[in-house]
Amino acid sequence: MSFESFGDFLAMGKHGLFVWTAYGICFTVLAINVASPLLARRRYLQQEARRLRRESNT
Image: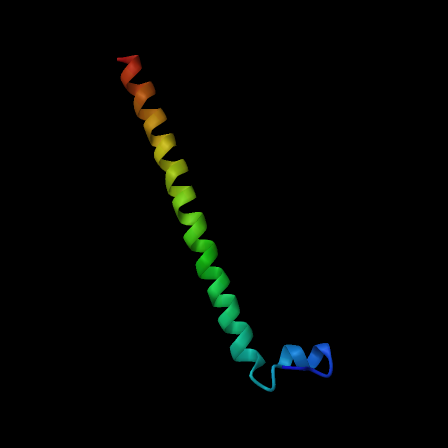
């Protein structure tokens, strides 16, 4: 597919809003799928560190 200008590329033949919204949703879901396990792991390690400190003090 060939476009006359960058503006035509962004408009995608009047389907640009749908196309770019779909790309945005896709990248958002991918980012959440990457970040969620990393944040959960960090939270788990912090909880375990607190638990070990609590147990070592008793």
